[in-house]
Structures are given as C-alpha cells and as structure tokens.
Length: 191
Image 1 (cartoon, one colour):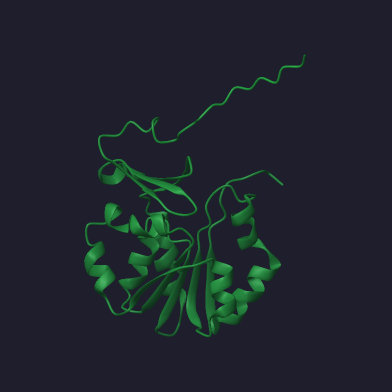
Image 2: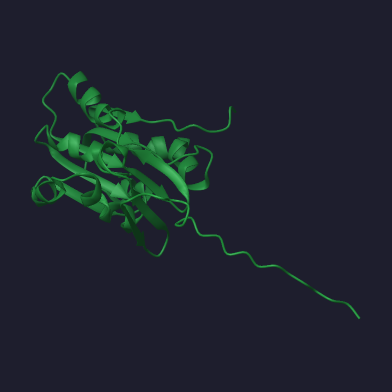
C-alpha cells in the first residue's frame, strides 16, 4: 500500500517585520507593508523590500527637469513606490502622472509623506492604477520627462519588461521631441 505524505508550510512575510508602526494593505495582486518611522520607513511588497525614503528618488525628478533648456510642462512616473519622485516632480508646478500597477502601493502614499493629502488635491497630480507599458500604449499624451523606477530585481518578470526594446519604443512615442527618460537600474544578476 502506497502512502502519499506532505507537509504544508504557510509562510507569511508580515510576522518578521518587527516595527513599532506598520500598515498592511492587500489588493488583488499583492500584499504591501509600510513599516518604520521617520526617515527609516520602508516599502515591502510580497515579502520583497522595494525601497526606503532615499534622496536618490528626488534626484530622479530634479536632475532631468533641471537639464532641460525649455520650461517643462509635464512628467510621467512609472512605478510609484513611496511617491517621492511623484511628489518632487510636482514641486516644479507641472502636470504629473504616476502609473502604479498595485493599488495597495499607491494607497500607501499617505504613510510616507505627511503632505500627501495636499499633493493629491492638486489639479496637476494624477495617479493611475495600470501597467506602465499598457498605459504608454494607450495614452496619447506626451511628456517632457518620463521616470521609471522598477522594483528589484531587474530580471524579475514584471520588471524585466520595463527594460525591453518594446518598452523603449513605447517611451519614444510618449516623449516630447526634447524629452528625457530617466530610468533606475535595480540590482540583479551580473548578466
């Protein structure tokens, strides 16, 4: 008589985060955890640490806008994260659209930035829940700056598509003639 035995292990990524303050959000795609306090806040999605409150995400907004000869009018953020790049782009008083795949990540904006409510009330601020590639393919808008900050690692299925030739072809269609693409390259395999 044959016997089939199995052990089932249920692993949660919520328990190991031992922070005094943490918020857990779930949507149809992911579990997002916002944790930490002050400058030590971090974003974890499905158990993978995505980002912290870092100055580099501000530079992703300010550097390409400052390089432009003409006054910028619009910007697009693909991969919202904590919303720091989005928030920084809006300080230039330009139309800013952010595209985020996960509703739970976009909903966490208020956790990371005390002025999130005021920013979201701006008529120049817009957050779209969608796939970044699909948004570019359907949009008819053009942008002075497009920033892309895919989640790590770069070779992950969803992130790797944001480094493809097809993606760059879509970006070219949505950039103004003198537009700038600023893309973060997340850590990953050496290849």
